[in-house]
Amino acid sequence: MRTALIIGTGLIGTSAALALTARGVTVHLRDRDTEQARTAAALGAGTAEPPPGPVDLAVIAVPPARVAPVLAEAQRAGVARGYLDVASVKGGPRRELADLGGDPRTYLGTHPMAGREQSGPLAATGDLFEGRPWVLTPMADTDTEVLNLALELVALCRAVPVVMDADAHDRAVALVSHTPQLLSSLVAARLESADETAVRLCGQGIRDVTRIAASEPRMWLDILSANPGPVADVLAAVASDLQETVRSLRALESADDAKRHEGSGGIEDVLRRGNSGRSRIPGKHGQTPTAYATVAVLISDRPGELARIFADAGQAGVNIEDVRIEHATGQQAGHVQLMVEQAAAVRLTEVLRERGWAIRQT
Image 1 (cartoon, helix red, strand yellow):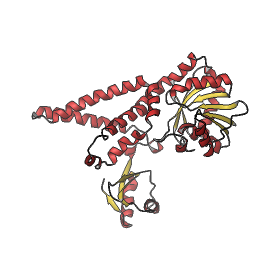
Image 2 (image 1 turned 90 degrees about the vertical axis):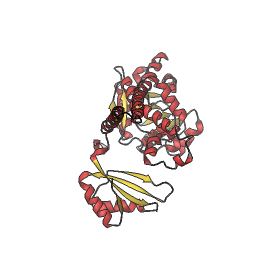
Image 3 (image 1 turned 180 degrees about the vertical axis):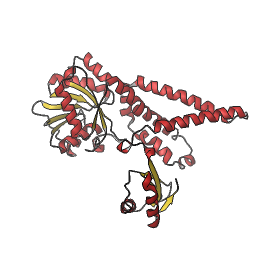
Image 4 (image 1 turned 90 degrees about the horizontal axis):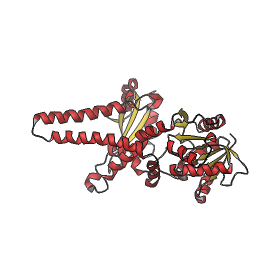
């Protein structure tokens, strides 16, 4: 691949353009908001000038509802040898392209499983896709050349290709991406009218649950509008669990011992099922998060403190597998949670204590 056209210079399009440009591909940028395309170009993502002729690959990085018409127009104009999109739903755009008379042979639906709460070119980064799954949904009539171009794009962005059926992909992302977004927003919405004293009690748990609720509503409306059925199916199952959980909690208020026992069993069941589901989420090197031990260290909010604790861990010969920071409300301090191999936890704890760090038991 020597040349590419990125149509849509938001977070995903600009991030792909930055990755391609860094690896020697000549990238042209197009957006219906010309100022946004110029911003992406100024960031080093390519040029906002139109290509002099057909490029090797056109990447359609627009909202799901616009993929098919933008793609069909690009195909009619013959702007590229191959075309792919990076929208978060796959079945709908393919069917809409067929209705518009587009060519399915030169098109491949894809979806990089990466993103941020921020949107737009200023949020883009050339390493956004590194190590992340990038779903490809080829059909029987997909040209081999287009598939090879897509695989090259994934390699240049240093992502991991995953081949799936388009509709299976849409059901999967409904579960692991679209429903979590809505649930995060639903929990965060409870804070909107909450008493200020309650909000001041917010800790790491509520921060974790509501992190993605900061995402751009208009963008998510576009995504959810393109995949409503599968998302509604997952939410219906969650709603059923919620109803059972509410009944169990009400039973715990009862004066009847048998009802309280039944309610306790219902709550324990959902918590244990949550443990089981959480344990299936792959982490670093494919391990589950529970495979690591956590060493929690009190840390002050001063320049260089994180570097010092990492250096001390390095001196102890312990590799930090993952890290989280739990901030203390209203204080210039917090806890750093260092995730390490189980066998290294005792040594790391001993060394950090010797060097003056306060360790919190977990």
